[in-house]
Structures are given as structure tokens and as C-alpha cells.
Image (cartoon, rainbow, N blue to C red; front, side):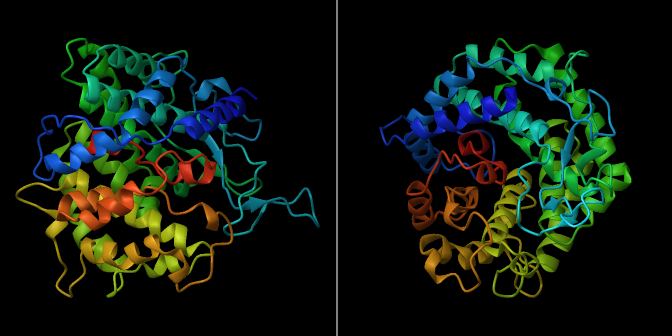
Length: 402
């Protein structure tokens, strides 16, 4: 019940968090070859009021971790993350039998309280880190550390650094590799910490303890069979494994794993998932082809944003047969501008809720100097309130990524 109240409070807050176009002075870019000052300044001007409102809300929040709620259907313990597969339902003909699948149709009775808590953590840290970038106020650092200590260090409330019980299915599986996608919600947590790591008030010992948690999670993510299964998934799940692994590897200074992720993007994800026209066939065959196509493109562009260097520029990488990330943006952008032109059937759920201010638009605009994509991004919803949209929009605070 507490988590439901929290989710409702966040949605009510997001409804009043409107977009501001007030002028804000450009600040110095973070190290990186793609952080063009004009685009970062545009993000600051567009989101300034919203960021400060969200940070004000975040400053009032107390930590809520996986130990706050539990489910009798979990095979794990108090500190284990647990969730249930979204598209699995009771068999109405045989109520005591294993759940059955209804692809694309979310079962609202499944246990997702831990996911909500993790999304809340991501929203908190993203808002606080963004406000810190805008203002330099050290109070935001202390609040981020308070929440991260509860999640990753405090033995009474911390989450175990593994995901063995995620997206379980009653009567079938106590957990699945597919559940690893739930921790994409931790990407803005580590990115926020990176933005703040040189703050005067940063607790270095605590920061290293948090890094140690993510080192352990990466070890599990790359060696457990669930992690291997997810890495080898041929659709957005494989993309999201690379995306979050890259984010956590950068946070933990794991250069070897970052190189592995770059190689996987170039030699596995791009050539095997993208068609010659820039579309994603594995996503188009789903019951929600529009939403899944957007989600996969968001993830691929985030990989480029995290991993590109002067020596290995993923934004400019093209396969031998002409596939590249720019082609993916150029394919989908017209359908973001005018959804009525979408050539496939409407998604079975949440068709009316997409698109929002997708990160692929601002990352792509920044990388390729596209004022058109920037204009599209600025005109879309920056504070969505629909739970499914929030869950599938792990990059909600683009300022901290530029």
C-alpha cells in the first residue's frame, strides 16, 4: 500500500511539473566529444523549472528499498529484488494451474512493488543530480547519498547484488534472465553519482562502497546463466543488457567490460537487430510494435552516448552493409512527428501514451547537430505520468548524460 501511495504521489507531482522555456546560462560541458554547448544549454532552458520542482520533491523523500515490501510468491529473501512477468495471467479455466501468457497485456495484480521502488530511486537521483548541475548546491549530494546508502550499503535495508527472482511466473519460474531488464532503472542512479563524484561534500568512502555493490552486480550479470541468457537475447532485452552493463562498467571504471560492450554493439546488436531501412524487425512483430521500436532505439542511442570516444565513435560507426544508428533515428522520427503514418497496427495497450520526449531525439540531435530532432524533443511530454511509459523510459533526465 505504501508503494502504491508513493506511485500516486509521483504521478500527481509529475502532472504539475510543466516545462519551462526560461533562459538559462550555458555551463561548461562534461568531458566528452559530443556535449555541444548549444544543445546542453537548450536542455537546461527547456527543463530548468521542471528539474527544480522535481528536486524540491526529492529533497523531502525518505529512502524506500526492497525491504519495504515483500510477496509470499517470492522464492527469495527479504533483501532480494522480486518482480513478476507483466504479461502472465491466471488460467481462468484452471485457477490453480500455472499462469498463461497474454503478450502485451499487463496484469495489474502481479507484484511490482520492488520495481516501483527502484523507479522511484532513479527519479530521485536523476532529479537531484540534474538540480546539482544547474545550481551546484551541495544539499542535493547529501540527499542522493542518503538514498544510495540505504539501497546499496546499509545491511538492514540494502538490496542483494543479484537478480535471481525477477519477472517470475507463478507455477513456472521463480525468476528469469528476462527480469534483468528491470535494473535499467539503476542507470540514472550511477550517472547521477558520476555527475556528483567531484562535489566538495562527496563521501568518498561511501561512494566506493556503492561502487563495490555495482562491481558485485556486474560480476553476477556477466557470469550467471540468467545474465548470459539476457545478453544473448535477440531483441530489446539484449540491447538493454548492453546498455546497463555499459553504464555500470563506466561507473566502476571497468574498461575491459566497456570494450566488450562496444564490440557487441558493432558486431551483434546493430547488424542483427536493424533492417536495411533502419527498422527493428524483432520489435515490429510484437503486439506493441510502436512502443517497442521506440524503446529499442532509445536503448541503442543511449549505448552510443555512454560508450563513444574519440577513438571509437559509435555515432559514426556503420556496418559493411550500411546500417548505422542515424538510419534508425531517421526511420522512426517521421512516426514520432505524426503517429498516424505508422505502417503497422496500433499497439494493443498504451498506444495513446506514446511518444514522449524520447532520449533518442535529444541524444541524436546532440550527436548530429539536428535542430529538427531537437524541436521534436522540445515539443513532447517531458514528465509522463503513465506507469508503463515511465517504466520504459529509463533516461528521464537527459541533462546529466550530456
